[in-house]
Image 1: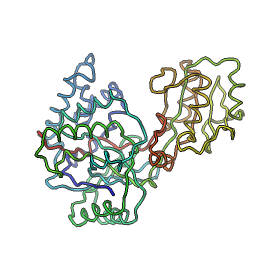
Image 2: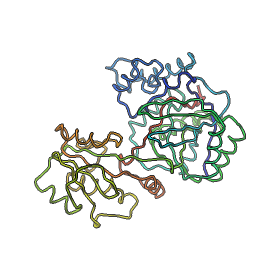
Image 3: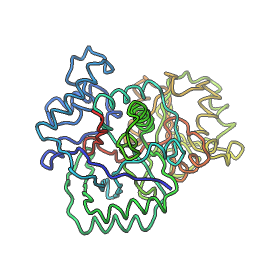
Amino acid sequence: MVLIHPFKSMRPKKEFSEQIATLPYDVLSSQEARDLGENNPYSYLHIDKAEIDLPESLSPYDDQVYAKAASNLQAFLQKQWLIQDEQPLLYLYELTMNGRAQTGLVTCTSINDYTDGKIKKHEFTRPEKEVDRIRHIEACDANTSPIFLTYRRNELIQQLMDDWKKSQTPVYDFTGFHEVSHRVWLIDDNKVIEQLVTAFAQNVPVLYIADGHHRTESAVKVGQKKKESLSDASDTAEINYFLSVIFPKEELEILDYNRILNVPIKADFFERLEKKFTIVKAAKGKPDQPKTFGMYLAGQWYQLTARETILSDDPVDGLDVSLLQNHVFADIFDIQDVRTDKRIDFVGGIRGMDELEQAVDSGKWSVAFAVYPTTMDDLLNVADAGKIMPPKSTWFEPKLLSGLFIHDLETN
């Protein structure tokens, strides 16, 4: 069973919450972050992507960037734009998008649970992206953005969370990016906190990373390194935990994560494609059932349906994104490693089919593929099997905003 850990969050003073909270660092380029932070001194991007306060010629991975992040964090605290709770608490974070709400428990989770396999992953990470967040966490002495975790719903935990929401007033309540509503409650009753800690310890055998594999690896490595240098630190010291928001998987939705390719379309392309898929012209691109794909080529949408011969019961090979990768990208275009091959790019489903059409119509990309979304059950099944999903298999919306919760590691 898993351990959750109440903590003293650094968080926005109520009147600054909407101005501070922002999109996560890893969905914004440096220029996009500059544009968002330019006229908003309260934006958390001054901490999370501190290069926006330094010359554009400077690398976002320069030592000065991490030093600036740390000094900006201290400045936000000194100005009391950010405050820190005096006692360890738990928090509820509700996001509502297009009428669908999801509520997560904001807490810290255990590094030991991660290393023991009780917090399961489904993606590989890239070392260079880990190093960036490791340096950021070390400079700030804090987990500066949360890990997005999920679990199979437990009725006791759900009842405790629902009862608290009904009986208490949220400390934050605002509408942010993409018209998403954000509400946060403080759980400051020690009895309820203990009930939730016990409920997880007795009823939740594992957690799953939904989004934030690089942040997880980085947080774990920083915690382990600090623990080695602080031999007298207790098992309850903050360095043993990392910041997380945990949602029941039944409330989450994965959007499609589509693909665009810049490849030559040879004369036998359709002939080769028909060996694995049935192909019909279509008026629209978005697939409406699993094992079907939209393909946009030369101004025309096609519906591709996987033939029985390529279907698989394997939790990874049977995924829609795997069928496309194995039987189109690898077999026909020799795109073997989508992490490094510049001929392929990815478009989150929130951008819609128009984005795929525009990419191809511009002439910069030759063909686009729309994919039916991976399901939460797919994700959990892959993680339970100890396997890894292909890159860019999941796109979660709405995004958890950064700046609402910061976990102080308390080693400075």
